[in-house]
Image (tube, rainbow, N blue to C red; front, side):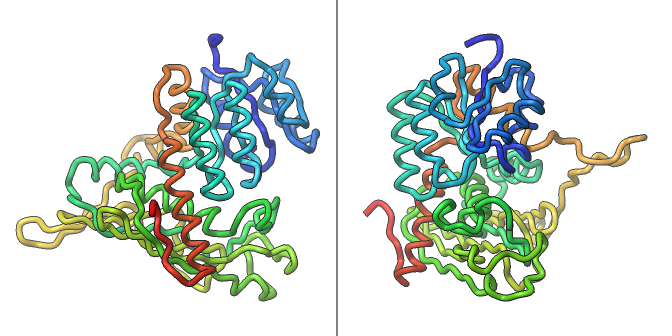
Length: 362
């Protein structure tokens, strides 16, 4: 490896420009040397704004993978292509950061995991919500033992009327689903990470498309075409883990609800509870009395400065990833963990179709 990690970007659309490219630009040890998109103009624009002066442009990702000087590939394409592009990249000797979800389904996710193990190439998934200041604080509280054994948790990603109307978000063939696989996956990953529990026993779930055909929509990003909306607008799951712990998962793009939260968790343990429903709140018993405490995440009280004292989660994610490549360390988000998330998402979709529980590892 040269003095910098050489990165190739496959997919130069919204998630690349909104997250991966600006984050990598902020990492001194990384340089973006190749850009690929089926729409050449998108690759050219990304290279101009974020690449090195000699960055190469491709419309065929396999041509990009032929460049042996590239160390890392970021896969920022629709869900359907996550698995085969990531697998081809690892087979070509590249480490892979794949945008969430890991794959369009658990079968494809398992292929990615197996390829990473066989080739020895690092594989991580873009669950940047772990890097938020509140997430890191909750995780530290759990690891300190102050919450005790966590036996019930809620994973919440609820929007009232915020359906993404651009790209292929509404296309089941390309994405595999709607709100559950898009934002529910973030809440589930965050919850399982905080619990450090990746062994599901069984789940039941329901998915709904109740508001997708109702116009006008009142949607934050405007109306969609009725015929384009082929996925669920909300989904709910009940997951029992092998150790007996329970996770309730709630996700929606469109739901007639006022109490909205995105990518947050509630954890209930034997010694206390912690949630993200109004900032971070810790509850328990102290001196025989119930208490609630709220940590302060602002940097107030400093002259000429107001705001957070923490770094941007997407930059922190990129820094940790590049550091793992340089220093040959495990990625912050392990492929095994992301695969467990994909298993549960699949289970909820299957349960919704069959009306029966789905058991894992039978």
